[in-house]
Length: 380
Image (cartoon, rainbow, N blue to C red; front, side):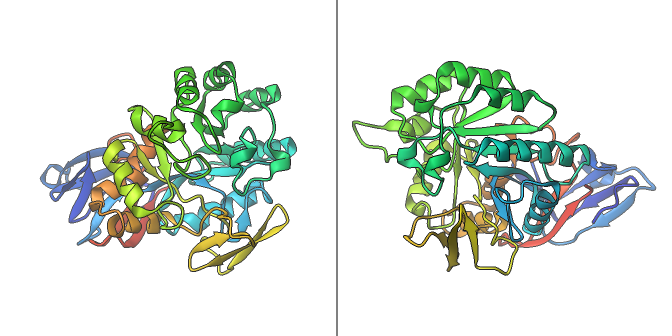
């Protein structure tokens, strides 16, 4: 780990800068930020240098959907200690920034999650850049593993929760057909980013929500109707509206790789984001956990309820990148972009995380040529 107490320079045989692998660059660090990216011969004399050697240095991964890790489910442990355990579990797989995610639950749990996020951020707990509320303002007809009894109408007091202190980046997943355009606008005015998920919205309803401020699509294809030739629906809106950002779970279970290849071709890596939808088994030895009192088991990397319903994933961001290379035929720099720069831009944090550029945080992954993680480097 590079020291955050002194100015130093970091280099490697290949460094990902503005989407290209550069072979003659070095990164000058000032505490926990990138000060300068320059050619090696331009490095000032007397600067401590750390050469990582032969490999590929890239921005740390940014995951927008992390339900748990290290044996912790955030719905059960919406605490600073729970957040820290999850952060540490995912950091070993290259995730240096993430949105702790609370799936549909009671308002008291939502409040506890918000309080924990604020406290964690006040303590500068590494990696926590905000919070993702996935629900409860969803459509019961596409509930997936969410508890139907906790799905409900939009609550005015939720706006107050968002405004009561710094939560960082706030992502809200909701069903556009269940929430008015006025509420979507109010959420955006409160600083939230709004995404469609667990929804049966039509093309027209989704487009109206986008005009009100919705910009994202949560785990595209999952918990939403398929696109049909004369009924494109929410998927059709996601694919046809150029400004929409789409999260995908590239584990080989949630969506067929052929569909994901077509999706990336349609949207490009400028708008496709890798997410894990990770559950407590990630970074843990356990192969099961409890959600809403129901046992979820993991077998061959697939998390399911007793009736076979998918319940999040056992995916790490490292594996999502590797799957993008092996299953989706993406070059390494494009796979990394979907795991770093694109989600950072979606959150409007591209000047802080997700890139190797002056002013950004000094969070990096160091990879082998085949994408396998060799080291995680962070000053936080």
